[in-house]
Image 1 (cartoon, rainbow, N blue to C red):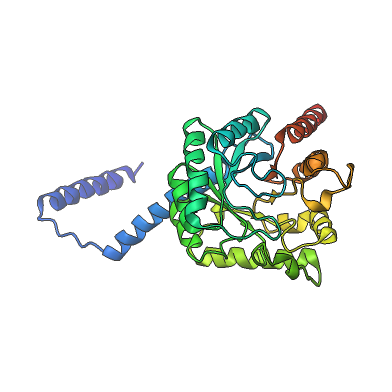
Image 2: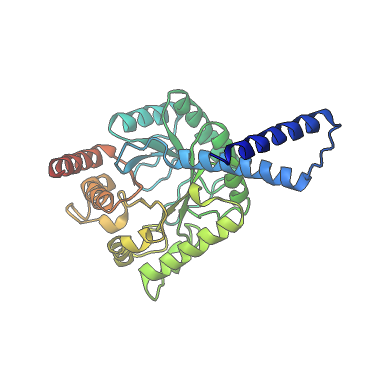
Length: 329
């Protein structure tokens, strides 16, 4: 009880000092570097929030995303030419969503083995009108491109994610564009363009070599300003890898997950699936069930997403797994 007057006296003294400070002319010293630092921190925090929102785009609660493939190209390996026209592309995107895709990955340049590059202007004429329409309809979109100019225009048109099979290596300006935009960024393992990549399918240990190269590329991108929250990694099935190496990488999924980043698995209809549960001489679409089985195994291991041509069988597989898990819990 004897301390109460002392506390009261201190409070009164603080009030008096406050009044005196308010009455005195103000002299404010502004540390511009500190202000700039705080503004930079706020901008960075905002970009991180945007990045996380982009990476989480269209994510169904507790489930791996299904990324539907939309090739607006005349020469993609399994469906080239089918959706090259604007109307056909938009119709197919809607069908992908109806069949279970959570987002649509729109690409205007084929990256099949042996494919040649196309001019950036051609790529943009193919994809940008489609992206604008899909975004206006409320469909989540990613853009499949190695070109920074296309990525920038696509994000401005509403794309939430840039899916670059080169991981930003094909275009030195890609890291700057992605960092500035706050878009999600799928960073794939890459060892060169499609016309020569298969010559580079030489590894001492496929899983460890690819993991190390992906880790190094992620570190480089972070130094260049891309935030970790923006990044999804893709081990690059079918890119500079033979059939055996692709299966080894799938079997070694946990090594990629151990990097602590979201993982995209993109095995759909690729050549290494030929003859697995289907006629080895059949068309690429006969590999859809094998693709869906890989989607299920990837989801079971916690994959961020699976990229598929036909979402319906993958959606069914994941729905069965969800029901099974729900019954166990």
